[in-house]
Picture: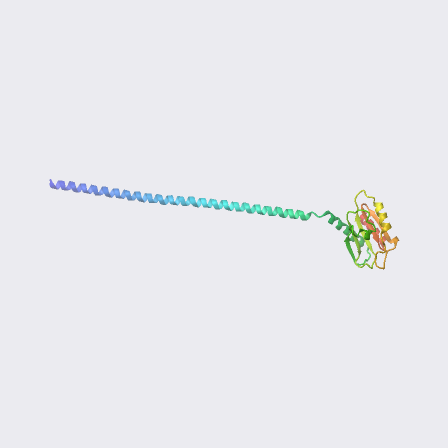
Length: 221
């Protein structure tokens, strides 16, 4: 009987010990599972944070690219505006250049030699000296005369508005221009020519004015 009771006691202790071991194992397994879950959660949080940072970097990069594109576009527009502004020549400068070209062609057409000449704009200040009269208006003009005033030569080319009395202007010039305005030299009245083609009027004072006049008519014809 005592042996039976002893066996029953041992069996009870054994079962109690196994129960405690199972509980401890379960607790440890639960702790391990919770730790793994925490690690997984932390990894997921890190991934989310990385994704957010990548998204922000991408947005910032796109904004910088857009800003750069806008700046480049504005620079190109400004460059085009500047180029267009430079391409628009001043009409007065263009006409003056055209008159100078005509004078150059007149000299070339004659095949004659001339002293060293200088072109200068015709202005209201020098109009009376160059043309002998300043009672009329003109659009643009160029005067070609020797650099040395001891040589008698003058060729003046200028334009006038539509509707003006060109014949009256030419008569005024012919009657008043000074053929002896240079030092010790001059041009005889018969070698002073005033003519026009359209609205372009020419004054020639030179001993070879016939050749210069003929070249002017041919070039403007």
